[in-house]
Length: 143
Image 1 (cartoon, rainbow, N blue to C red):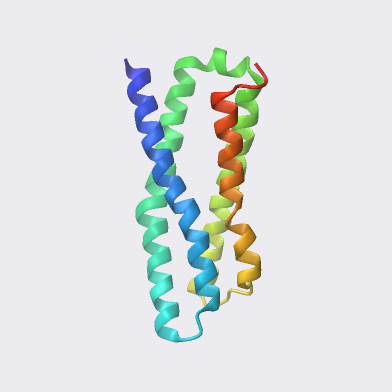
Image 2 (spheres, one colour; image 1 turned 45 degrees about the vertical axis):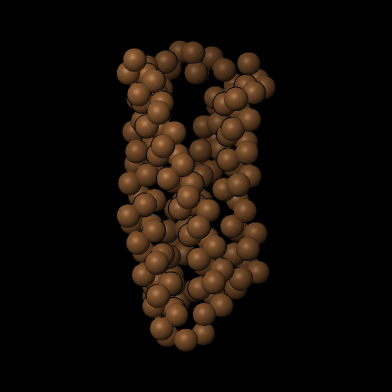
C-alpha cells in the first residue's frame, strides 16, 4: 500500500515540477525581450516565485518519493535497462533545472547575454526528456 501512495505523490510532484520546467524558460523568452525596467522587474518576480515556490519543493518531492519507490523495489529496477535510460534522462532534467536556476540568477543581476533565439529551443528540452521518460516507464523497451 505504501508503494501506491508513494507513486501517487511522485506523479503529483512530477506534474508540478514539469509545470515549472515548461513555464520558466518561456518566461525567459519574454524577459529577454523586455526593454523597460518595470517589465524586467515583473519578470524577475515571476521567475523567482515560480522557481522558489513551485519548482524547488516539487523537485525535492520528486526526488524523495522517487527515492522511496526505488528503495522499495531496487533489485527489479536495476535489472532493467529502461530504468537506467530513465535515470539518465532524469539526470539531464536536473542539469536543465540547474541551468534554469543559473539563468534566473543572471536575469536577477541584469547580466543575461542570451536572446530569445537561444531561449526558444532551450524551452523544448524538458518536452523531449519527458517523452523519453514516459516511453521508458510505459513501454519499457529495454526489458
